[in-house]
Image 1 (cartoon, rainbow, N blue to C red):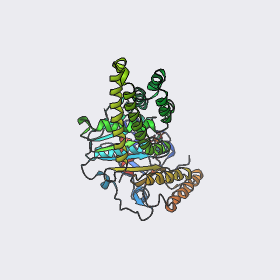
Image 2 (image 1 turned 90 degrees about the vertical axis):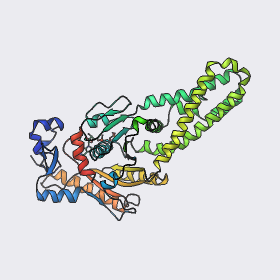
Image 3 (image 1 turned 120 degrees about the vertical axis):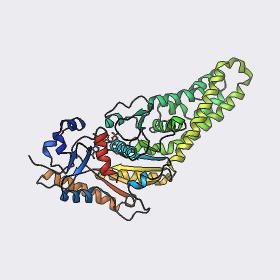
Image 4 (image 1 turned 60 degrees about the vertical axis):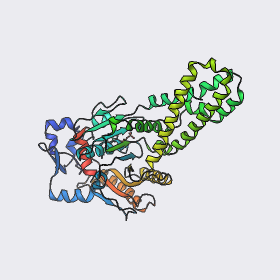
Length: 407
Ligand SMILES: Nc1ncnc2c1ncn2[C@@H]1O[C@H](COP(=O)(O)OP(=O)(O)OP(=O)(O)O)[C@@H](O)[C@H]1O
């Protein structure tokens, strides 16, 4: 069988304990570059030649003179003030694997860390091979320091928003107003396009509300211990819309609240009829006001160069790199700080006569070249992540990937 030089915990695959940690997919068809020392639970390099290859291929390096002087992981791990890392990119490129591996690395470096998924299609549980569902803080077993995960349930968040807006000026009030013959205010409601917003929420709304929810959590003492917060965000399209959503929602919620004031005065004559309804509307207004405040915080957080970094994750294909370039352009327009670009799933050079591997690698190198010439991407610090021959699942596998990527 032709063999190719993928990164694999090869010698370890003989050990039954590791078989449990890694699926043994394709292990017979690979030549291991790394071996595993079960006692220390760390992967070590197999030979000097391979070490040289490993270091030259997979360390953090710049493709061009970076605009900003960006250090490696030392820079990410330094300081005890809270920092946020948002990982985003095209679907399936490895965002969750990179986010989870970064979170493990932070936790193993002494930072109490929280990893949050705001992707409506969560895969954190799959990545950690642990059940992290439930929408609350769940401890992750394995790392040396506390690592918690939080998967926000977007349906639940959206439902909360829906009921708050309905009570405070959305379709519920619209029906009520029509019933009361107050048609002129209904027209103003129409202007808000609330029905549309609630019935077919724009992509990104779930995520905006999910992030707002995280901001709400972070205000509570239970969350004050975390010094690193890693977000596994939704695929690019959602993220881009997410960036403009806080402004949109801020404006919409502002309008809803203003409208509510008008409704209150218009209905003051029949106030007694309102009874309980009035109280629940006040509650809803309060909730909306809070949501609006959190949206403003989300917007500020995304643009805070001291506390936040958006890391673009991509793969070496023309399509993915073109999309990353557009993402970077949009992030720049929105003043979201980006310093690093992770190019994941890079095939190592083939040491055999595997034609498929050679052609694929050439293709990838062409795509990597694009980065050097791309006006949006060339100034970023490039982190190359290898394609490994096992599925990245569970803390040991994430540690393995993290130690290669985050240096
Ligand atoms: N460097 C790598 N080598 C081998 N497999 C990888 C690598 N990175 C990620 N994978 C695998 O690719 C698959 C997709 O990875 P992951 O879920 O991290 O991507 P994603 O970008 O978060 O996807 P989605 O957008 O669907 O959430 C997983 O099976 C993961 O194990």
